[in-house]
Image (cartoon, rainbow, N blue to C red; front, side, top):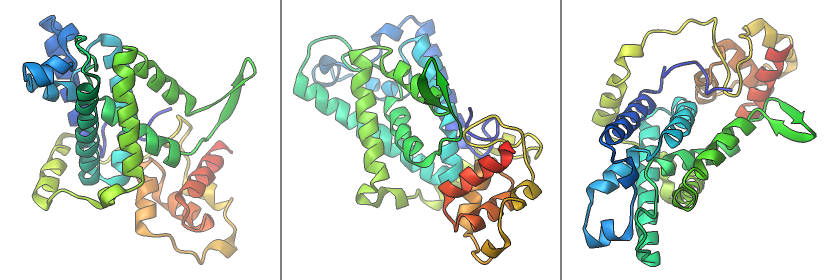
Length: 291
């Protein structure tokens, strides 16, 4: 299961964040200071180590956390492809800022003298991304293992659970705050989902992708939720009744499916059949691909 076309095509912000997270983690790891990362009451309200606030956004405190964290960040690049780099940058800024404020508030309330009560890393962003993952990414396959039902999304949930419990109490708290931030964003509190950065910032973000702006080959196109063989438009046409052709899908809906790795013509026809419902259209495309 992956998040669409391989690599960071059309996901420059995710690429920059993943690189920054990896570099920060390696830098403090080489210096042997990984165990000192994280936030405590004394750090913020006693010694005023505000640099830790910045570091806690990027650097993980252990190698297992780094592996699972970067894997999830890489997978969730699909959301940048869906909403665009500008809005995804707003999503990142919103989730890391609000989750950080929640963490500071928790430290102020608990006043626990324990060292590093909250673990370091972009937990706010990662676990906020599980909210749109739950609501917007459809299940394509289901299966059983020893009588227990799983889906193709289960592996992402298991990776998230592993990360959530990686530092036990220290990681559960920022994980919960991340889910709260994702829920607030999903509910469009203060119309945050419509927010965008100014045009000059959007232009800068677009230039971040210049090394990989080449058009990817069409053959290895993949979908949002699995590594299934590529398909072409005629495969979808066989499953779409001609009576549905009157419903013309919007350009935004087509672009969303194309960003997930589907062929443009196939995406348009599936949306025609689904009456512009992206979730239904995604399932149609997946079913067509399975035949």
